[in-house]
Amino acid sequence: AKSIQDIDLDRARDILDKSFMDGYEDVPLVELSPQFRSIGDVRRFYEEYFKEELAHFEEGHLFWTQAFLNNKLVGWATFELESQEADAAYMNLLIVDPE
Image (cartoon, rainbow, N blue to C red; front, top):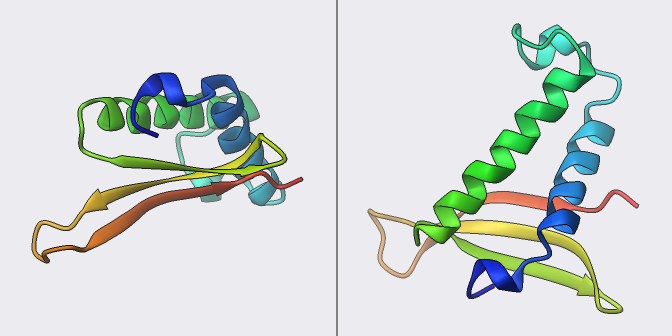
């Protein structure tokens, strides 16, 4: 994505939420974080995480790539350029729709 307008924000947020909620469905909340008291806490954590990734992208700190299947967003990833290695990038986050 070149700008935030290129991202289906609702779908991207939904994929993040579903991916993590499905992936950690059977993990006790306290094992994820001692601060989590409810599924709502987990959801709010990932909503905030999404906002932070988006802000870093808007500030130019991350590259945002998207994957589509039949014109539907099915995943996305963010990358950050390595400060110690020329022409190298670190994958910050990879999210794929669990469906």
